[in-house]
Length: 179
Ligand code: HEM
Ligand code: HEM
Image (cartoon, rainbow, N blue to C red; front, side, top):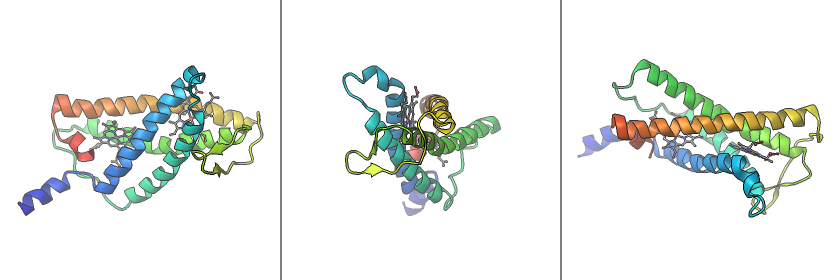
């Protein structure tokens, strides 16, 4: 029925938000795994050129996603969600949005100081900042990229665990809102 379909729609994120979420999630998971495990497999396959290009795409898509995010409001959470849960969800989502910008930005600054190009999947080279190798800015960007990259990995694990907990343990509709 039309009215039933309409009220069901209200419980979900809009399709553009769901598409942004899915595409960026796959890319962030790839970058977290390739960033942490990259050196270990470098002899078989060096993932860092793809890591860098994918990171730049994450930055661009996240800017578009955050712009789009200002044009709509999220669907209401179910009444079963307590105030603490809502606060933790809001803080985690906010931190993920910030890290989706800051982690690639620090990677970009760090990689600008390296001799290797930032090749966008072999199609063209991404521009670099004028950062000098071993300068305080290059060092700070490298340190921040490592610390914030690991923080992002931890938050993603927490976020996915929370989504699965909602779906399989609490059995509410939180997961279906986003997929
Ligand atoms: C959301 C996007 C990104 C995530 C989650 C991410 C995450 C990570 C993580 C966790 C590491 C391992 C840190 C370490 O052990 O030192 C890493 C390393 C690295 N990342 Fe990223 N990164 C992202 C984007 C980028 C971008 C845009 C670039 C450059 C254009 C980049 C360049 C690098 C490089 C060159 C390394 C190796 C650093 C080294 O070991 O010397 N990353 N990244
Ligand atoms: C397969 C893994 C993932 C699952 C199952 C998942 C699940 C979800 C779900 C169910 C929501 C909606 C929460 C709600 O209704 O309040 C959500 C929101 C969100 N997710 Fe994920 N997620 C995943 C991966 C990621 C990754 C890797 C990121 C990192 C960029 C991410 C960033 C976000 C953000 C920022 C929101 C908040 C959306 C908003 O309200 O504006 N997710 N996720």
